Length: 499
Image (cartoon, rainbow, N blue to C red):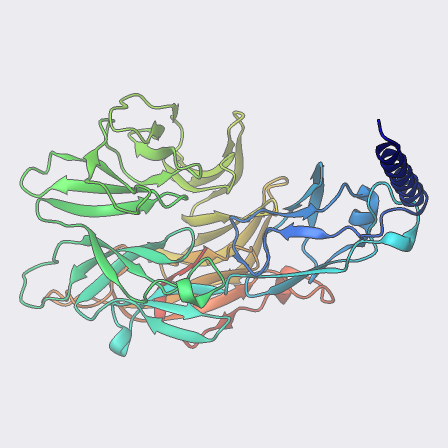
């Protein structure tokens, strides 16, 4: 090797040794002083989103493993939203204990948290602030006066805005919102005065203009009506929509052969296209209600309630409860149900039935048990009951009551005027009830087919809606006597909150 080449390699070795020494020094400095780059939140799953009752948890993804206690101690949500924290590596999950309050803007902030390997406060997390909102407080109802008569009306309590959803040529009889509130399934008859008797009912959907997302750009068009099921060959009676919005169950009877009677199922595919109706092979029955998991239906059959799978070919029930005659409501998680037993002494009993075999009588009455709804968080059920008024004529006094599921204690909340058909609806956040107060008229000899009616077929001449707050502010004692219902300036009936 020449002298010049040997000198070149010796110089290269000195440069390499110098670089190694510098890198070693930098490594020592990093080890002793820590990483100069502060940890941060890489992703917040609810950022700028609009959430509803079906949204139960949000996630924070961090740039590095975090000190768990420092994160949990410094995480702030305003207004407060109770929940539980769990971890999977760098990912934190915050699971809600109760639904978000609708019509509310929330802020999530995190300051002062440290990563797992930092021993001082010198390198705290980059300040984080996230924002999300809950859906507007909104409900739909059936109008009874003026241009709203017989139409489906949407009222946004948050925005104080009212919208008529259905056209003037349809008289709506019943409806159910889809789980995200973007559309409503409803039954309606044609507003035709030249027909004799009541025209047959058909099923439709109508869009509400509401989108699960916070961006208004993706909102579906408002008031778009589409036919779901006609009444050419079959008369459509009652219907129910599954909690996931993918299954419609309709009670139908053949118009030419009344012996052909049963439940028909319609399913939605991934493109939201509804399939042709198929008849369930199981034995037909009376009142029915789809279970919260959308996989089965509770049907009143003879001297009991059958739980049937939502499968066309299924003929045997999953379960049969012989002592009950009606299912009023399921708890949101599907583990409990409110059922009615018709007793031999002409009284009625309300039972709490769960999936562990419990059958607990909550009350017995000589009046009626019209409807019940489970609270989404509390161990309470709210029921519209009646008490029999003694006298020469048969009269029932309706009242709203809260029943503690653990103790069975019944607390009357509101006494209503004398009427048989009172509809109640509990808001998805569990903070308020809606109910109607209707006035009916005696039917005339000439049939009135263009006017709204009760479930008993009585003509509704007037009706008002009432908002019943279930909880007062934290600074006020929440005794039942302090619950003050508010009459809404809305002439309508059959109100239902949007999910």
